[in-house]
Length: 433
Ligand code: CTP
Image 1 (cartoon, protein in one colour):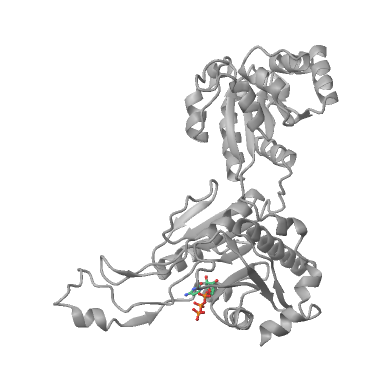
Image 2 (spheres, protein in one colour):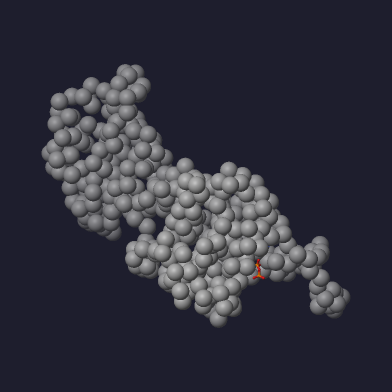
């Protein structure tokens, strides 16, 4: 059996040697909890850009909570941030009756405290250790790293007091995302404009230790089952939960990719930032995936596509008694193979990853699918007897032209990163050749 031959001899399992699975990946089997950024918003015209910062962080899978000064609320309402974050917004020291020490609980929740925009006044308070509102009190109470994106008039920015405050804060380990030179709200031109939103988001993710190695890449993911109609009531489908595909989309977004997610019906929320294209049948899914495919760098076909569909979907419900024969003798026709169809259209710069759900001879079947479908990589796993479908963990085998590599059991979100690592590695190897 190919499986045994590949797995028992590490020399034949070229992937093991070249792309060992890091201990980190193996250890990532604990539940994936998103990092929390506490975003401080202060009173500055640029406060409206904080809403875009929230979105940018959410796209990378970050949970954002907002704390505002009273002056910030003159520029943007707390309701905006409440709606965007779906979290309560902290606006006053005594505004959360259920949490008398709100600043302390906020301070403890934060993995990073980002203040964007930060006024000269708030910088001065932070430098002096003044804690006279919810934002500055939380900043003093938190042990999370502090990241500041200042925005103010050019002369305020360059005033000796502001410079000294900045130096003092840097001396305490606070990081800054410098303001930009440009046209300022007051009409002056000079340094003081809030840094670009992308630069703020990148700096925050870097401070959290997130990789951004897929920035500039486009990723397509198909996910979930397809549903093939028999009549307006009945259908043929399968048990796919979509969890693997959604984990791939989430991981790619977190690493900075632009993601198109083509999904069959699932009970999952699409990750913020993904362009979601909903599909029902295999034919719908092929059309949606085909529209996205040109220009995609990595295409991951994780959907469980029904291989067959009823030859004709009845326009009216088939009735017991009247339509028994038609119901018991349903005729089927083959669905298009989305992976094989698009792999045949790929350009050399595109990496195509397929999946193989198998009940038997997992490695052998994965090898066959790799060749038959023209994929660059197949992620194979055993299904049936309660395995994989709907589960949060997966034990996969990566199969490419070089051989097969068995991965340890890990959560689908961690597996998604390992699959992306492998695909990016193969893409880079190809470009280097
Ligand atoms: N796939 C596809 N379109 C299909 C069938 C499968 O794009 N009509 C893709 C799946 O998304 C997956 C891979 O092909 O990436 C293998 O799917 P799988 O269901 O394991 O295999 P099948 O090709 O359907 O073959 P079989 O059911 O005989 O194992």
